[in-house]
Length: 100
Image (cartoon, rainbow, N blue to C red; front, side, top):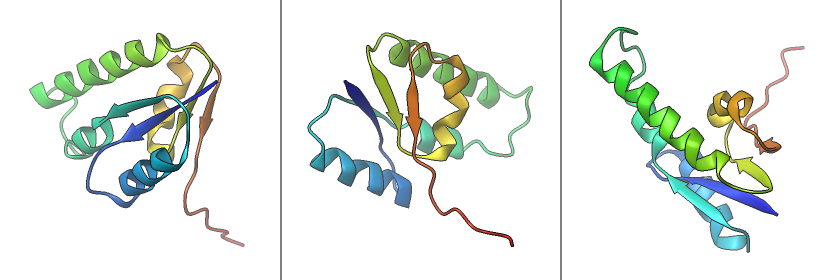
């Protein structure tokens, strides 16, 4: 079975994930991690915000690692979790651009 990770937020990839979730009859895990972490881009590695982000990432990873089957990460920004997942996963990559 495939479990879809549905990101909640105001971005276009969040909208895509929500619309995909409406159409698929699969288990879903809802999270706003992408929205929260995106708000902390360009934050110092040694700041309180960075420490919180690490804790939030760890919490999501524990949650995902409790699932059985394949995990579908609906955008490439969630790919950073792939290395730490114990099960196979799928990443949807958006907007591939050829440079040749």
